[in-house]
Image (cartoon, rainbow, N blue to C red; front, side, top):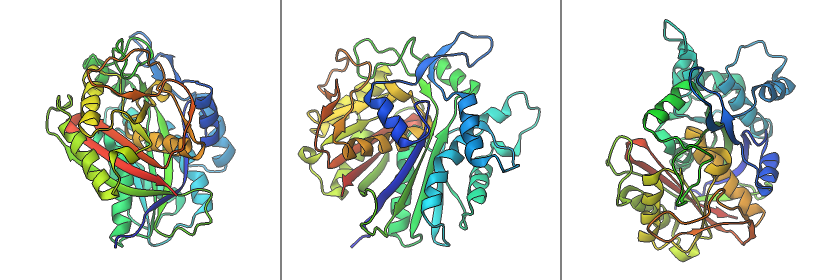
Length: 379
């Protein structure tokens, strides 16, 4: 029998706050981090979700002012996210550190004639791991926008094999000229705050965040909360370098595999935390896949209207918020949704509502045709 794997602690750093409680309270009030920000000097402002740099530095100095090491903006976000977890849980010889990111310190490349060492994802992971005293070699998960969900899967599977006893999973990406320029070249950025699944959606908002979770097989029952990672799956539909499958094949297969492992039927799922980027083809693909799995009646939301798309951080951050929803027995609305704009029916949440949430389905899809899913159970 496989070991049971639990998420027993987590934290996040976002434009809505520097811990989970502040984020949850802001979400309950319907607040969004999405606003106009000037990212590229010679272009107009974009709707993005961005952490205030002055507030970030102030919060960082509260905890790390005594350290003389120079840290990048992203590294400060990651350190703040992970610090409360490391304080509460032991880092041992059998603890693994897993970093999820898509671009890492990509901003270091700006105006640099040579390639800075810190731009390598391995160096970023090593710097954070060394700071907190991790004893094993860091693992990096960088698979486009499914990275945050896949990092949970990697932790689960590595602990189940017996290679590690527990894991600290951290995810983060920051806004940069490189990322905004890339998505803008696809003509994928929305002209206003994004509207996932809505008839009038016209593109994505990019965001930034850091999130961290503690995952273990050594649950004692004395934790503040526990969520069992029941099932996981990652499938690539190999459709296109940037476009999702028109038939939802990859996401459908990922959901089916994860739910089969979890031994959970469609009618048992209480809530779906979907990817929901507000791009034309992604939202339609998800609607098709959910209907193929007979999940069209399950309450569903996208968090992109609150946080934007935080790339490698999005999957872990949104998993954390979905677990908070279960703990508070509250479903959050899919912000900015007004009128259905996909061809298949979905039960999109439109207002805060009370609900008993035991089984959570978290999905993510990304460039290159990748799709990842985890099924979580509130214990």
